Length: 436
Image 1 (cartoon, rainbow, N blue to C red):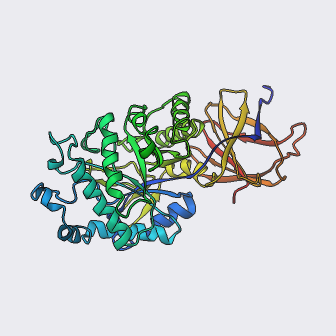
Image 2: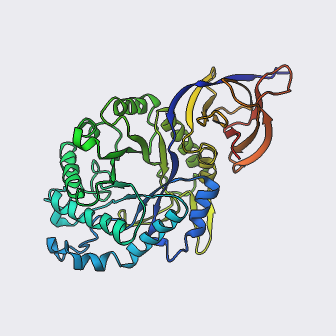
Image 3: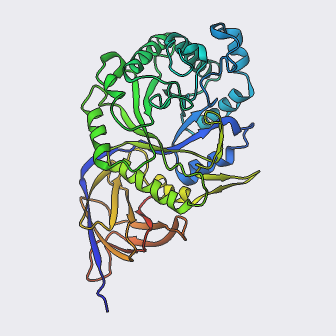
């Protein structure tokens, strides 16, 4: 008979890393329809634990002149009155107002192409003044006419890729665009902080022109990037270290989009698994937050395509959480805003484990993945003062959806083992937590 293999791990509460701002979703507000999405937002907030909502109201950045018929003359108050009272924007205001009611200030973003008269070749942004005026009108209306409570705005999306994701802007020019925006925002929008640079390809080519600029760095609230591949922890940590050694060291660092872009619909467990693996990389790499792409299946205007990237499957009148929803819930629900990541020591490559606690060390959440094809037994010890509370054990696998498996003690009675003792089946995602 093969002897029981027990893998020890240790959580050291005294060695702290980054603070967590929270987790959330990218969300398309065009389906708000007078509140039809309230049950979806309630599910995302109350069950999933989402706190970060990146809201794209229009889907493209050409709303002042979508047909290129008016030219720069579209930048006038009469046109704004018509646009910002239109159905698309009313849906956006309605969704964001409801988020405010739920205690959440949305992160407003803009993506997609700009009017051709803001470019030189149909794709490369050159009229920064026109662009700044359009964005100013949008935020001014949101803040002063609709009374939306928000602090963060992402003006550009994946400018390293260009259309259809956003206008093309080269790294050095990006800083000039942001400078023009900052100057325009001095007229009543000085309190808005920018989320930059939302690149599609992960590197420092864009941020290096921003994070040590004395003027620009003061207006940045969040440094944010996108990730749809298995970027190594070391590369992610080099990025966060670069930001924290700059004038932007006070800024949060988020992964503004992450997940997987499979459109077959035949690989749901794979998508759930690989998205969680990437989230572990993001957290181990020192990021303060992560935002899944995206909330629910829908038509995306900037891509002009129906997409099934959502955590929730959308039916005619029914919204159903997918496997990727439950795998995200293993982290989102139990790693609360203002928790800090703490050190874990694990002597096995069969597992990944991360641990988090609150500022008073009253709460503890341990999340992990069994990477192997074996049943594993884990025995964890806690270094540092923490009350001997009851821990709840939750698990998602190909057959399970964030089920509560059992309750555990921080100090097991399962002699001869000490500390937390539990079993994890092959290829499963698990959470052991004091959080209810």
